[in-house]
Amino acid sequence: MSRRLVLVSSHFAPSNLVGGHRARLWSRYLPEFGWEPTVVTGNPRHYEEQPDPDLERLVAPGLEVVHAATLPVRPIKLVGDVGVRAFWGCYRAVADLVRQRRADFVLVTIPSNFLAPLGRLVHGRFGVPFGIVFAESLACGTPVISCPTGALPEILRQGVDGFLIKSIEEACEAVGKLGTIDRAACRRRAVEHFSADAVLTRYLELYTRLVGRKAA
Image (cartoon, rainbow, N blue to C red; front, side):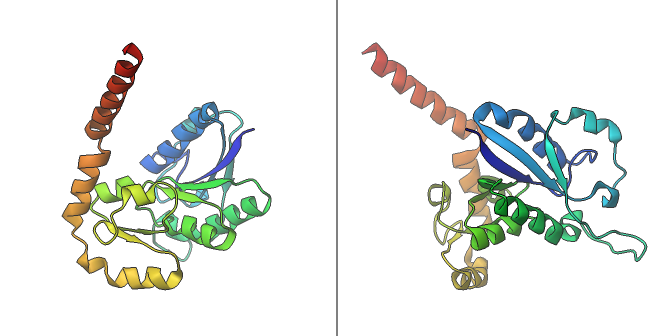
């Protein structure tokens, strides 16, 4: 039975921004790994840039895309990233999917996007697990504050790369301690442990050990 994954991306085809392409590519291949994706995104009529309709032809056939309510930039000339203007619309759209039992996991495709807190809000209210690519945050030198679930206790060193918290109060306290985190150390952590070279090296070491055991 497929598990249901909600991909949250402020942009999607016909947008040509990287976040939209990431969600588009993931949604095409996720079914091969047992995931049924749904994309929740902003309304393309209110993107800042000019949409490219040809990009819609690259979207996987049959993919469900939910265009959430998004504040326009006109006629009152409201300026701001679509992640801000679509935040509550996307939150309500994801909450509706959760209530319909159509969300087993929520993934925000760009960790530094303004939509990033959405996963934490959904988890806090409904208990649905969520993911943001935490290693990418560290690669940008950005400390992480999140719950000690999934792989995070393996990725994050408490008080060194960020803080693992279990309540809103602990989260607020952690925000006040962000100044104690060395952002260069966050970057080094990502490069040394989660870069392509580091991961590839560990995979090769693992496969070499497994082949050696089989040969023995």
